[in-house]
Image (cartoon, rainbow, N blue to C red; front, side, top):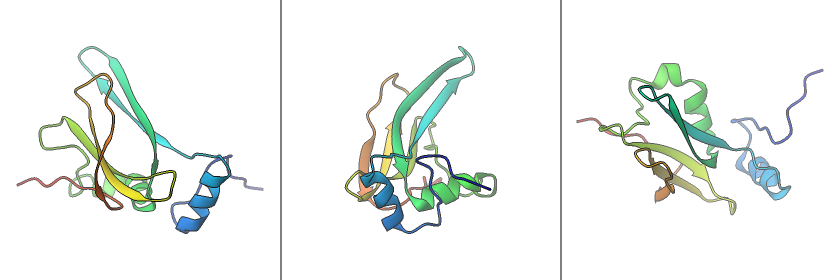
Length: 117
């Protein structure tokens, strides 16, 4: 039989299923890790609970990479969609130029994409 790992969830589940998981104290989360290839230093940034749309984008990122940019044009920030513990969805950014960076919620929403003009 197939079983899901504790705290795991399906991107296609309803928002109420994710909220139920959160209410049970299980926090399925992701965290950004950035590797500096010149120094081989890895920086890990705070964990977040991704929105369904963010999970979908990451699941098929090989298809989206050219048109849906998560890195800012100057390669200093990442943008992503997250769900807070009270069930609200925000678009957030994290500054990857700092060893410790606190994510900033920039707007209500489910996913963010950088514009290249």
